[in-house]
Structure formats: structure tokens, C-alpha cells
Length: 118
Length: 112
Image (cartoon, rainbow over all chains, first blue to last red; front, side, top):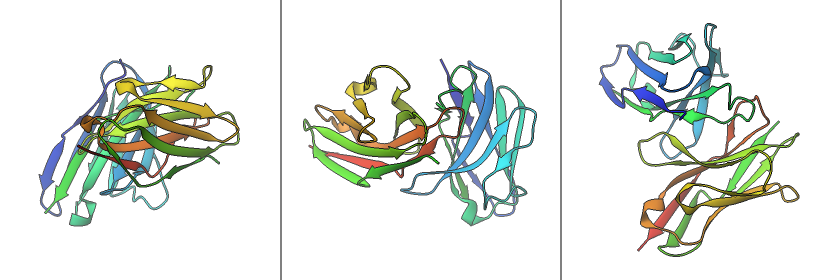
């Protein structure tokens, strides 16, 4: 149980275009979803936290107009990188927690999405 | 505030040797502790977790970790390394209903 699926796994886009990444909890209701960014050979950097039906909470230094997060349902959150530039190229990972694990902080991770902006 | 320190950004072992990845944490309340593994270009997979109860926790792929409150440690071990264990390992701490805080990760390299 507690499977999180992320799509697409790889995406290449041209500079100036927007890219949407989806994160779905397949077998549980994700009350909270998190989006991380990971640079090569580094740890995960939390970008934002989103609760279903409310606006995402962004970490300091993360541009909310650049990285649009929507959590419209208990099983789906999306991250849209708007007007992407080469410096946005990175590995983006989503994670989710449901009511049964929320009290421990345990997270269930998607497979990650590799974004390359040309 | 909670924090995690992973000693050693890289650990190299020979196949069949003991694996020891170190993790120390800081928490103002009894913590929940996790080890995740990340293979190249993949998300994180939970290896094991400590929430309450037995302080020696067994996880997948033969890994285990022991919660030592007096040492504020949660080191990850495996008696005999396999080539397939080569990956990045992240220790993480939570104080419950809070954001998980990750360490910087330790890359495990396994040589034949």
C-alpha cells in the first residue's frame, strides 16, 4: 500500500515553455503533498507543502509564480514550472502523507521527474 | 527544531563487508526516525523506520538500524554488502505531524 506515482519521469522542453508534473496517490488519500527539488549529488530541498483544497505553502526562496502547485483532490497534486529556463533543470520529487502515517511524519515518494530545459 | 547529521558523504565497502552508515539527530521531543534509499534517477524508498517500541528496527534488503537515545543516533547497518546496495541513503527525522527533515545523504559505493 501507500503508492505514489509521478508523471512524467522525464521531460525535455524548450526555454520559455511551461511544464506540468503530476503526482498521484494510488491507494490512499493524501491529505498533504510535498514537492522537492534535488540538485545533482545533493539532498532534497523542500519547495512547498500543499494540503488538499488550499493554497500551497512555499519555502523561503521558492518563487510561487514560477512553480505553481495545485492540490485539487486528495489523490492528485500538480507542479507546473512556468516559463521554464535552463536553470530550472533538475530532478523534482513529490511525496505524500495520509492520515494513517501523518502522526509520524512518514512520507511516501513518487518516482521523480527529470526536467531538462533546453 | 529538528535536524539530522549524516557523517560521511561517501562510504566505500567491499562486497561482503559490513555496511555502517552513521546518522545523528537533534529533536526536542521523542523523534520518529527513518532511513530512505535512492537509486539513480528514482524517488526515495523507505528502508526502515522507528516510531515506538523496539529500538532495533529491521528493514528491507537485510538492513537494520538501532535507535540510541543516549547517543541521539540511528545508524544503519547491514552485515554483508551486495553490489545492488550501491545507492544514496538518507536519514530523516520527524517530531510527529511535522515536516520530515532529511540529512544530506550518504553515497554507498560497493566494490567487487
